[in-house]
Image (cartoon, rainbow, N blue to C red):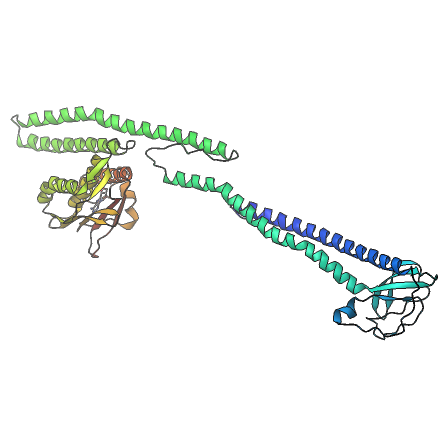
Length: 438
Ligand SMILES: Nc1ncnc2c1ncn2[C@@H]1O[C@H](COP(=O)(O)OP(=O)(O)O)[C@@H](O)[C@H]1O
Ligand SMILES: [Mg+2]
C-alpha cells in the first residue's frame, strides 16, 4: 500500500488514463479500419460504374507489372467466366460466371478477393476484383496513422498530471517544513496562505492546538519564574539570620551545626538562582538580541570560575581564544558558557585539567570545554540536559539545572550543544557549542 497520497493519485490517474486511452484507441482503430474498407468498396463501385459505359473485353495478354507495387495493387477487370491468364493466384483470378451483381468476396487458391460485379454497355456481366489483403493493409495503415497523435498525447497527459499533482502538494510539503523549523519557545500558528480548502480545517485545528500548547508552556514557565522569585526573599533572609547567629557565642557543637545549616541555605539560594535563570532562558524570544563578543564572555566566565578551580586544584586555562561574534541575548550566551565551565571544574577530580577554546570554523563559531573528569556515559548524554537530572555517585552537590539552562540557552541562541569523548581519546568529557557567527 502506497502511503503517499500524491503517488496514489498519480498511480490511479495514470492507470485510468492509460486504460481509457487504450479503449479509445481500440474503438478509433476499429472505426477507421471499417471506414477505409467502405471507402475502397465505393472506389470499386465507381470504377465498375465508369467501365459500364463501354464494352469490357477479356484481356488477351498476360498482365505485366511495372514493379512490385504494381503487381500487388493492380485491379483485375474482366468479363465473368473468362479464364484467368496469369497462373499466379496472387496476381490474377478467374471470376466465376455465377457471381451475382454487386459487391462480394470470393476465395480462389487461398487468396481472398473483393469483387464488384456489373454489366457493360453490351449487357455482359463483368467484375472488378481487388485482393482483400491489400485492402486490409491500406485500411490498417490509415487506422494506425489516426492513432499516432494519441500515442504522443498520452505520455504528455501523464506528465501534466504528475506536474499538477506535484504543484498541488507542494504547499503541504512546505507546511511540514514550517512545522519542523518552528521554535518551541515561541509557537507561531502555521501560515494558512495557499493551503487547499480540503486540508485547511486540519491546519486550523493544528493552529488552535498550537495556541493552547503555547499558552500552557508560558503558564508553566511563569509558574517556575514566580515561584523562584517568591522564594528568593525568604531564603536570603534565612541566610542573613544564620550569618548573624554566627556572631553569637556558640558552643563548638552548635557552631558545627550552624555551619551545616549555612551550607544548606547556600545550596537553597543557589537552587533558587538557577531556577530563575532557567525560567529566564526558557522565556519567549529574547528581547535583547544583539551582537555578542563570545571571546569577552568566555574570558569573564573563566575569571569567575578561577577561584573554584583553585580550590579544587584544577588547572583551568584557555588554549585558544579567537575573537568571535554571534547574535542573540548576551545573558543566554553567558549562562551557557558559565555552566559548561562550571561543570567541567566541578566534576573533574583534583589535579585535573580543564581546557577552554573558542574558534571560528567556516561560518560557525565553536566554543569547547574539555576536562579530565569521568565523562558522561553515552546512554545518559541526552538525559543530563533534562531539568533536575543528575548522575548519582559524584561527591559534588548540585541541583541538576545547569545543563538544562545550557540547552535552553542554546535553543534560544539558535545554536547546538554536543557532549562527546575527548579528541585525544583520554578519559574526560568534551562539551561543544556551535552557532553561526554574526
Ligand atoms: N563535565 C562533566 N563531567 C562529568 N559529568 C558531568 C559533567 N557535566 C555534567 N555532568 C553530569 O551531568 C549532570 C547534570 O549536570 P547539570 O545539569 O549541570 O547539573 P548539576 O551540575 O547541578 O548536577 C551532573 O550531575 C553530572 O553528573
Ligand atoms: Mg552543573
